[in-house]
Length: 156
Image (tube, rainbow, N blue to C red; front, side, top):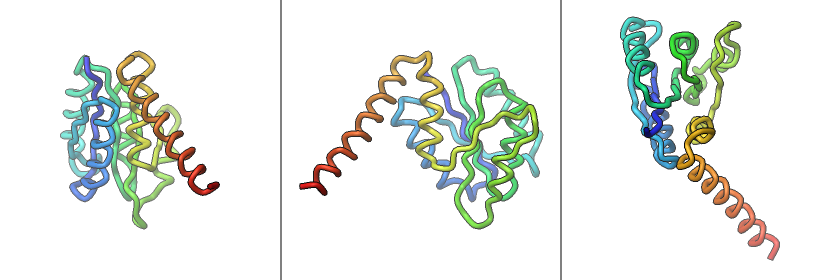
């Protein structure tokens, strides 16, 4: 079963950031699905989405993308069994503390870089999925090679 990342953004304004996460998921052989739902404005819609995806038998990770106050991550985490990663979009309007300081019993992680959010999801899947593990290892090797080649270039 191919792993699934559910990218839940709080508003259409988060689309570009969410698309970057979705693109990175493809790099690791993970199927992304992008949805919109606001914990503040459409809580019943969000609950419906969470229940539907939580019932899906595929291995999954939820990545929430919400600016300003990150109620979406705090709302999502206790509603699902799968891991939740908060990846708020950049900007002056984003309250990072609302992503970093969740109440006790709400255990979502916060990762600020879209590629790294997808990488964290891939590493979660890699524990049991050998195909994803291979793609993560290959990505890590390419990152090492890039740095070593750059070092060789600057050192002559």
